[in-house]
Picture: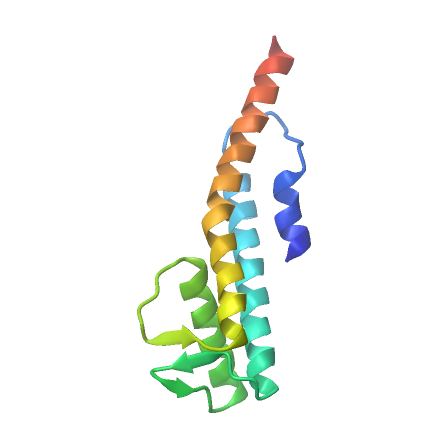
Length: 126
């Protein structure tokens, strides 16, 4: 996840405007972060360190059910939806805070990177 986020700050551009390739790159970055945090939540749950309450209850059920719930919670946190049916507890609050911060700053970092790349292209073209 860290390496995926790090690519936002590497200044190199093909001098192109926002493209399908950029959208795919951004989608891949979001997917990597979503899955990474879902696995973090799942690992805590599997070690009997509850970090998620689902409808007020601790997670239980099969591995697959816990994986689905962890992924759902990760997506709701990342995209700041928060329906209210699922909430972090204990250490999960800290992890969710970090993920929410990434979810808020990622679009801004992408826009800033695109603007910087376009400005550098304009300077080279002059």
